[in-house]
Amino acid sequence: SNQLAVRCDLHLDALTQPIPPMRTLLLVCSTAAALRSPAHRVRLPSLQRAAAPAAPPAPVAAAGNKVQKRLIALLSFNAGVADVVLFKKHGCFATMMTGNLIKGTCALVDAKWADARFFGCMILSYLAGCSGQRILDQRATPRTKSRVIALATFLLFRCSDVFGGASARRGALWLAAGFGLVNAVSVDVLLTITWMLTIHMQKLTNYATDAIGLSGAKAKASAKFGPVLRRSCVVLALFAAGIGAGHYFCEACLDMAGFSTLFGAWYALIVLSHDQGRVGLDSLGKALLLNKNANPGLLDE
Image (tube, rainbow, N blue to C red):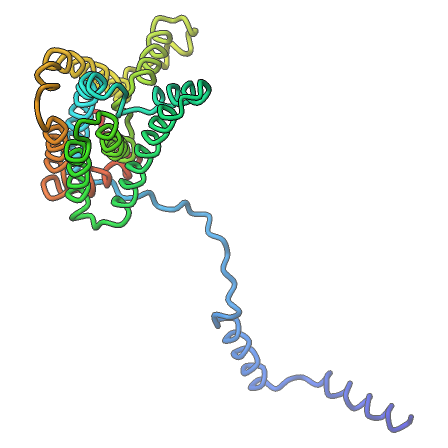
């Protein structure tokens, strides 16, 4: 026990002895090196906000603005024509699925299995077209994306004439897939519904209600006829013009052999005329739309 006490005293004396300056310097350097190593480095969370995506140059933004306006106008006009002509030819809507869902559900309740099967296939065909646009949009390269989408659109409309034959319903199934692809482009790229008018009427009605003061002074003061409302006016006007044109030329269109092929070629030309090779953008102006928050002036002209 005495030996153990002596050893403890020696250890305590060693610990209380002052450390030589050189040893102190080496200890400090080794500690600092350990703290600087990646394994022991402490990263404090940054309080800086991530930088916003760079806004596109002014000439590119102006080009993208014109691209979007032309596409919205042309697609709205085409949707009006298609709703009149194709409904009279095929007995159903190929551009929107609400009516097909209603008819299919009623046929199912009435045990009309052939009708229920057809309208169910119409909806599935439309969804297949939407899925096809998504696949092409994600997998095709930016340089070829618009051209691939244009080709796919033309082929689907062409198949309506080739495989439809005398059966109006078989032809409608191919058209539903084609319009699913076209409408997906409208929503995903243009962020606008060009084949239905209810939402646009609602937006304009809300603005009118606020503008005349029925919603209160605060709503009236903040009411502004901005680019979104102007876009809704364009959709309404061009869709109505398409309905008029479709009704006027309906008889000639119904008697025309290969009308669906011609219509598909027209859609393909619309897409090709706005591809990135011409305006220097990704698919149909999407690159600009993704940066619209960084460029408040975009789409305002």
